[in-house]
Length: 252
Image 1 (cartoon, rainbow, N blue to C red):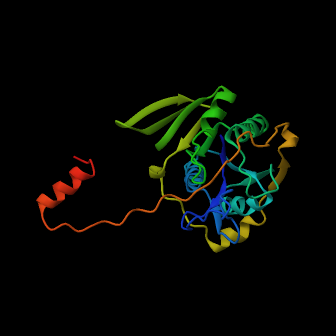
Image 2 (cartoon, rainbow, N blue to C red; image 1 turned 90 degrees about the vertical axis):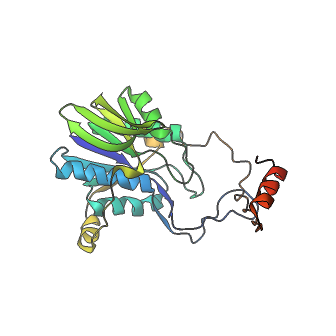
Image 3 (cartoon, rainbow, N blue to C red; image 1 turned 45 degrees about the vertical axis):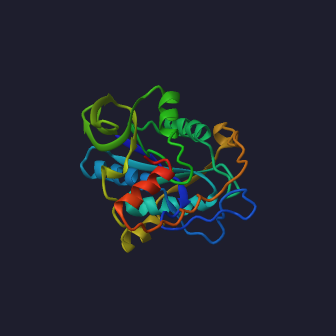
């Protein structure tokens, strides 16, 4: 079975995001970029399936700018077999929207014929949480979302999902699309020898136009603002004063 894993290049989760002075978006100048953490977990799980002889090949795909090659090389260094880069934008500030990504991924799935698509449940830059579900609908495949456990049982995938009431375990027919949550695994670090080997692994470069997909944005970002700063607290001298302050604030 072949496993396809989409990965996205985002601002590193350790970096404090800065908004442009004119409010037109996020400032990406001289900012460290890395693989979306949810996608990193998906790559790790795909590699583990291969190590357990439940998958034969792991193919990683990134859709965006040419700089996403770095992200794909990271996935290859972790243990993926080959990579596909779909150049769909020239400006690093242009975010390819979920529907366009899903359409491109569908075209790649039609070419590659994987038995499983493993994706992060969402990207940390836009929090859309939509691509996996859209891809499942376009393909007409089964889907399992927010996976915290995954097992392949013959021609079915057993997925434990995180839901509001706790955990839900479902069994879906393969081929399927599964989106993963943070508690599925702990991604490995790429060793130096594997980083060197990754430079020789195949990385095909294609374009969105080559798949007949228009990746131009349908949404317009009107304004971007930083979260409001938290107001300073006050120290009260007694429980009675605390209750009084809460009443004034309408909290009780």
